[in-house]
Length: 261
Image (cartoon, rainbow, N blue to C red; front, side):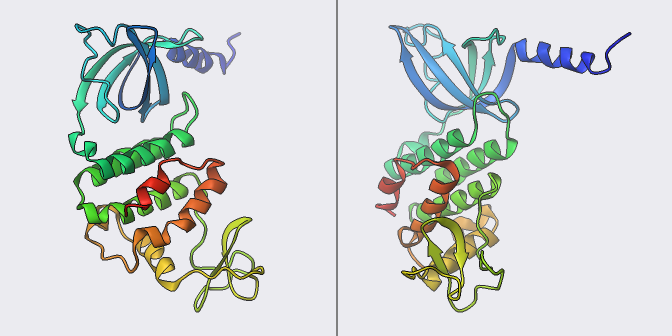
């Protein structure tokens, strides 16, 4: 008698062992011995994938110029046999040359790091991939003056994707609308009304809250056109706190980025 769950399980096992051919974004590279590289990519269908690109440093390597940071490639990974996959092939789809400008590079690197924090190896989350890809498109093309608030908007979308975005309109304690004033607390990501805020009071500037609400309520494609009510660096402390609570990480590039925005 056939086990009803056996066939899907067998197909899943075969899929896990099969060669993978996927569109992917290059997230990280590290040297391995003299001529090879370990490459980490993000794919929409399979999440974060790591493979060994043998001979990637050789002058005649087919990988030359294709595995640069944040390039989009069609990647072929070997079958999963319980160890490190081989990156067998990488066909270049898109090279993001505009991101080599220093401020754009900082912003794109920060976004890539957030995406890597969000996904363990071999777990797919299409929303994280789409956010990275769309975010890179925005950072690549936007006016330099818009980079700061675009990064804030991408951070807010990232918090939404991972289910950690606080309510900006209601007190986290009583649920009442936050109208005249809102307050933060170091031990919770939620916002509070005056009646429930802890001492010492940490009020949030009205224009900071206005910017975050504006970014949340505006489609990302329109962010480059916004006139923010306050500079991005003034509003950056709130998403920084929320990200630290949600990811238990403090992105190292973020302070450098907002010091220049």
